[in-house]
Length: 276
Image 1 (spheres, helix red, strand yellow):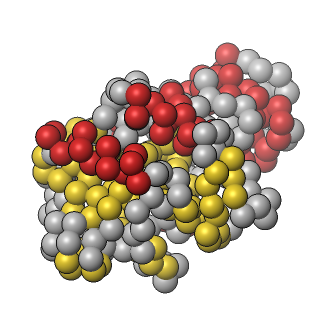
Image 2 (cartoon, one colour):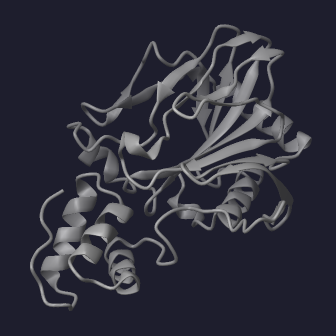
């Protein structure tokens, strides 16, 4: 991360230019906030400056659950159960985020458009086939239909993050033997393709994996550094956030091989600012 300009405690064009440059290099809001605090800025002021400069929510640096010990959360049109939570990393297993009918409808709508899943090509900013990911999938555009729009609004309320800061909903199917080896969802600032990727909405800062259909055996979402396996249950989900593009966030995760049956999931990635 480049040095913060030595400036008086007022918002100058140089400061805003520095913030935009750090964002283009892949540094997260939390990293920039810490740098400004070290330079003497008050937290609230620094957060507001970052928010107005990068056009992100001023309420906080990360999507979050307003949990405070509650066993259920209000997602607007649905009460969602909190089944497990961790504080480092910020992770929660959620029950009944989607109804059975919504799970079936997403699968039905996605099935005709399935194709071999791609991964982000970090060298170029495009997409590429990878032996690490052997599912098939498709993307809905944001708000593509009434079902998708309803689920996106529910997620936005639950996670306190604007709808427009989310990527399109991705639906994935894993047949027996299919898996996604452990990986991070953020974009590595050291890779040459990252600046191109970040132009569409900044860094990814959180992931929500929703289970549409559980396989007969296998297919857990695994967090190797935590010794945690989240078993897929229809309508349930796992949420986790990462405040910087670094392995220290303990956000390494993967999809274990399906051993029998089919697993269907819907994934929502959340960005720092509006995804275009």
